[in-house]
Amino acid sequence: PAHLGLGLARFRLERYDEAVLDLERARTHFRDSGRVVRALEAEALLARVALAQGHTQQALATVDGILAVLRRRPLHGVLDPAAVYLSCHRVLAAVADPRAAQVLVDGYQLLMTQAATIDDDAARARFLHHHVSNRALLALWDRPDAPVSPVVAPVGVAGRFDPPTITGPNPVGLTFH
Image (tube, rainbow, N blue to C red; front, side, top):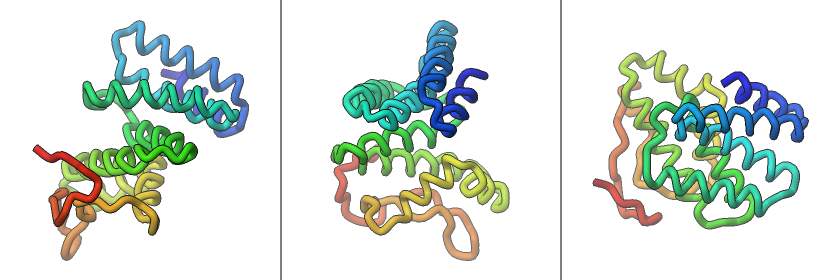
């Protein structure tokens, strides 16, 4: 787990070669200990490193692998699911892949589902706005060019939380069960 944090720090410092080594160690550690979903956090950062280094095909291949896992299992056990979705979205958006919009929708819906479990308004606000990845995901969602979605905003009238609901047509082809 420490290698994941080191990899993130080195990525932010643009020390990409060192970041790759740390992230590969983290990925190996998680896989070897049977925590395949936790390995996705390292994979997502590896995709961003590859993108930053100009290796778009490698970044895209990594994201394809992450999305394949996400189709089969939820992100239970991941410490920062918003970061995984953000990384995938950023890579897909950088190569103008149309899946970027759906990944943003999926990440936003997961974030709102998590927020719905927090009863205290102040704690929910901290969760949504003080956590770097959550705040970044919300900022992307609030952009004028964000995808249209049937999901409503997290806070309703008088600060009461309204869980995500379908409010109209389904323009992005989402399936709800």
